[in-house]
Amino acid sequence: MSDDVELLDRIRKGALDDFAEIIQRHQAQVFAILHRYERDAQKVEDLAQETFIKAWRFLDRFDGRAPFQHWISKIALRVALDHLRRIKRIRPEIALAELGEEALDWLQDPGEETHLAAQRAGELLGIAMRELSAEDRQVITLLEIEGRSVKEICGLTGWTSAAVRVRAYRARGKLRKTLTSMEKMKNE
Amino acid sequence: MNDRKLKELFELSRGEQPPTPPMGFDARVVTALRRESRSQAGPLSLWEQLGQLLPRLAVATVMVVGVCVAVDFYASTDAPSLTAGIDQISDQWLFAQNGN
Image 1 (cartoon, rainbow over the protein chains, first blue to last red):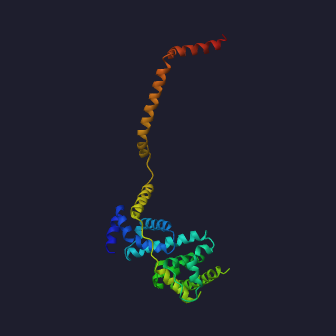
Image 2 (image 1 turned 135 degrees about the vertical axis):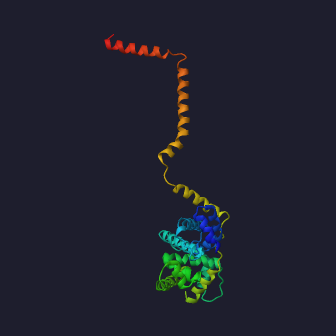
């Protein structure tokens, strides 16, 4: 948004209350990004708060060449990556109970007869992606779920296009393996 | 898990609705920022610290003086006067020195 720049100038000069306007404009986008990495609504809110606090702290580094929306997305992704690295250390084992009947039925159906709701699909993918590293999970989320291009991912993460492609290829393989083992869980 | 199924899972999860930001989220962030900017303010100088402390010191001093006056007033009603008390103590000390 063009008037983000004017508002940000005022904030830099000390008008902290104007930052509320910036938050209102970009909060939906920040919540949407963070929700891809954390399913607990309260934790998403905490991460969103962390994102905006970081944005305010480093506001001097925003030069206005790219839209603010792009800059805040990069911060949100950075916050999400740090969060994934933190929770990776306390990652629980995948339990049959947490998958749910609907997801298990869908996984075991070789055809297209079983329906899976978007929320259940998100939950299933979230559980399976716990097995991936933070970086692998981020590349799969950006590429496959958000539908971003490799070039866009390079701009957001700072990785090279070769690194993005290799990481995505390996991550897809790991994810397929995890989902296959989840498919077999019910029969064991 | 084949490629088709994995792609389908990605597509399905794309349709998931993200949570809507709660009411007053912006105000909460601004409050946190205000708290942070206040705590980041530079350390106070000695004069500023004294200036902040002085009203409390003045009140405490007045209270201590008041308590002392009250104690002296109530203690002196049935006790000998201060000079008589001092005379007595010094006499006892002098006699004790002389071995009486």
